Image (cartoon, rainbow, N blue to C red; front, side, top):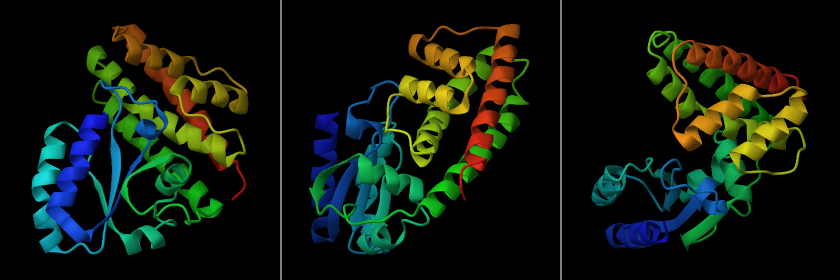
Length: 236
């Protein structure tokens, strides 16, 4: 991870020169919960300006980064970083708590993320992901292996949003997914067996099949709905 991040910074510096203001690592990798097989490397690149000229210069770096299966670089101008905390409340809330400045200025330190924007984005993202999960699952009920893969692919996002729900409700910060689920079980006052089973599948790679997959989906939908209702009940 350190090698790839160092190479990214050097490539960005070479391509963008004095237009590169800051490179910041955020997400699980910034707090040591990074797993080579399952975790992303999330990187904010702040530039002085972003015009077609800068995008053209950055193109070889972006193509190289994406060719390795990494998520897209978050390209913002320094001014956009300073003025977008209301639009990207979740992302900037994460960065306020967990980040590593890989190059340049720490543009996050003085940002303020208001709870009203933070709460609204958490609920919006939860409801959107829940709807998307239902839509995709409706196409896969007769295909248990693909259905389980859908659940495994989705659980990380729901854990991230669940962690933010806990933070919004006043709970202590936690990062590891199993700890987030344990915290949610306390906050929601109910076990989250489907979440735990899906995390176990994610870790082991051993998949349930047939009716077990459909039952897992049924319980998972109940539990994600409980999480949505928990956030909806928090002070607006």
